[in-house]
Image (cartoon, rainbow, N blue to C red; front, side, top):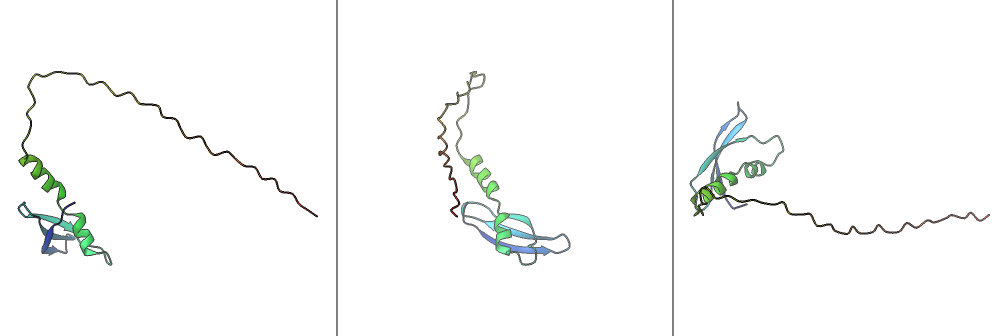
Length: 102
């Protein structure tokens, strides 16, 4: 998650949306239609949940240098064998017998 700023641009009460513009360092602004908060719901939480982190990450991925694979390259990938691990022994059960003294 990254820090971001936001500004509520418009509110569309009929459709239950607010249009929020999100900005973060190194990226152009992105406007998102965000649902209106329910009565008593924290507005900042709703805005934070709709922040376009995936869009920012995708933009960074697309801009990053790539290693190009060789066309026609072939290979085989074998599944890794699962390694059996010893399961912890369950704790011994203690039986307590009650005696009634009269």
